[in-house]
Length: 206
Image (spheres, rainbow, N blue to C red):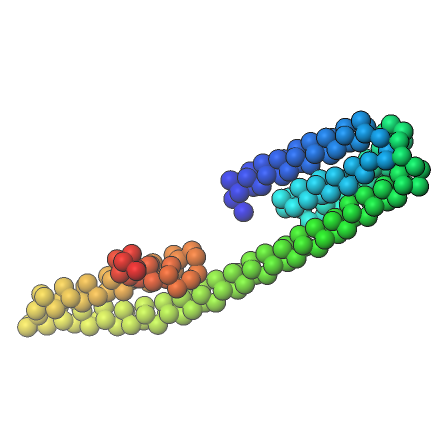
């Protein structure tokens, strides 16, 4: 992971934390100004959902714990209002909604992390296979090129030497070497990238 990617992730994480903190503060402020009978604690669900933009799977659970504490604190500091049993039930419903959301978000984030890990593992395996294939192909091709080089040297030493034939062989040797180097330098292992490395002009017209 390069420095630019790390910086982008840190910036994204910082924004997520700021959004979550802002939403939590806004909901707690609403809770402070509304009577206890109003079920505004359920709004903390938005804080947990905001954590979905984070790269950390455990953040929804952490925020659920924080929001649960704010929900309970709101019970003691909010203005009086409503019947006691209804107030308690509303708070319990809010806590249930917060934790159901947090668990679902956590499981989804873990699933996404596992999918990404699997994708990276497959990419690494694919590159290893490609690299091994290219190295094997290089061994075969370079052996063939060495043999062609010997043939070219014999042609040059022949008294009926044709310069055009030597030029053709030089062209073949140079092109083959360049193509193998291009294949070795492929970064993204897919059909299009491999085709572009070998036939850049033809691939551009596809």
